[in-house]
Every structure is written in structure tokens, then in C-alpha cells.
Length: 360
Image 1 (cartoon, one colour):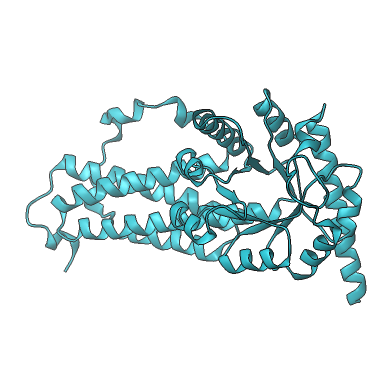
Image 2: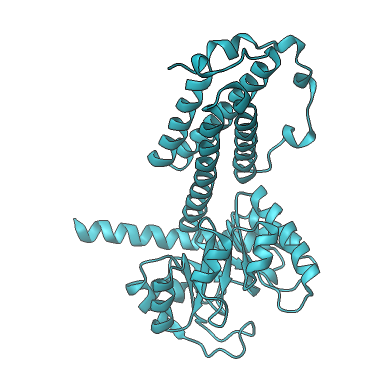
């Protein structure tokens, strides 16, 4: 039985125009998302789900609905908003188009109930599938960004916090953790929101230290948990599957437990004694060597690492490092960031060359 035969009453022109406009909106938004899944993430699964959803939308986009279109008489073509005229980065672009698709599907679900008894049900299920797609895609993208990130900036209290972080982002930084042990919650939340917007403008991730609630409230990319913080599984329940969760570790036992809990990455250290963690005994380079040999998940050497001892850490097997004072207290954060990244890339190339040579 066709869609037209299912309907009880003739459709009003206005109803057809609403359905036509929102089918267009949903299909266009999905195509924008699909292009990033295909060319940006190289994910056949995510791109395939986008394509399947577009094909299902096309099934409902009948000639009757298309024929009701009256673009010259549509007052909506003249309406716009400044936020629609710009995108600060890929994160905002994707989020905006997911909102566009989800809003259109909600309209189709409600007005579709009037047009066809099966239409409302179909678009309700499709809307839930798009929610899942959004979670999967953003989670996948965050994890791919984590894998690509070799330098991790952990912030400390500074009057010019945003300025230092932006300078580091301009130097190529793609991963930032907001860490603040002294400010009140209102200040912390305001800072997380500002940093989140700033990081996403540069297509970087923002992780919040310890505080799952602040990460949720500011829509940050994840949290970093200490050994005394929430279990990873509990944090995952609160954050959802698409967020990044890291765990600090100081020895092999803590590393193994973090991996079993499902952490996305771990901190390995402190490698050297540091005033940031005055109560922690240095784990030393032996733990870096252990992580290099044993960790199946991304890990960052952390603790007292600076431009003077970086080579020691890299020679011990680290391919990713986290720093605090080296950038936060630098006179030229952009240049220091570029130096760290250049040395990390150099070491990665040397390791790759050595691996190829050994195989041949």
C-alpha cells in the first residue's frame, strides 16, 4: 500500500510545504555530516548510516510534497541569524547540523502524524537513530583526535589563562585539560565554558580535571580522573559513551586497573618530582619504559617534563607528553608549544624509520 493510499484525508498545501521543507532540511544536514564521516574520519560505518538515513528520508519525499513547494512566497528564505553565518570549527559545524537534522525530524514526526499514520512512527525511530549516530560520531572523532594528539597541556592558575591557552593552540596544540584546585565553582564553570569554546574554535579537545559535573554543565569533551576520583564506569554512565575519560596512574597496578575499567587514555607519572604534585613520589623513567612496552591504550608521560629533559623521556619510549609549567609559565607559549610538537614528531619519525629498517 502506498503512502498516499494510507492517508485518510487530503493533505492541505501548507502541511505538504512543512513536510517538504523539513525533509529537505534533514537530508541536507545529513549530507553535510556524511561528508565528514567519509572524508574527514574515513569511517565507512558512520558514512553508511548517514546514507541509509538519507535514503529513508527520500522514500517519504514524494512528488506530492515536492509539488507543494513555493519558494518565492516563503517568508523563511529572508530569515537568518548571525550564528548561522559562521562556524568556529568542525565541532560546531557538526553539532549545528545534528541539531538541524534532529529538529527537522521532530517536525516531521509531529506533522507526519496528520499526513500519514505511519509517518510519525517512522520519523520517531529515525530521530533516535540520529541521536545514536551523533553520540557515535562525536565519540569517534574525539578518540581520533586523542590518538593524533602528542602534546597535552594541563592548565594552572593564571590571570591570563585564556591568553596562554590560545597562544598554545596557535602553536598547534590539540588537547587541553582545565585543572584548578582553588577557585570556587562559579569561576571554574565560567572558565570551562570559555575554554571549551576556545578549544573547539581551534578543533582541539577540552578535558576537565576531576569534575564530571562541570564537564557535563559546560559540554566539555571529557574528564581526567585521579586515583581517588569516581570509577571510570560511573563517570561513563554520567557522561555518556561519546566523551573521553582519562585516568592518572603511578605504577603498573594502577595502569592495569585503569585499562580494565575502560579508560580512553592514562597519565604516566609523575616522571620527575613536580610542585604540581608535591605529595607524589616520582615514578621515574622506569615506569615510562614499562608503559611503552605494556600499555595498549594511549598514554601521556607527565610530571616535571620540560625542554631540558624532554629527550630523556622520549628516549625512554614516550611518544606523548603532558606539561604544565613549561607552557603555562613560558614567556612565549606558542614557540614552546611548537618546539615540543616538533620534537615529538621528530622522535615519531625516527621510531617509524627504525621499525621499517628492522623489518627489512
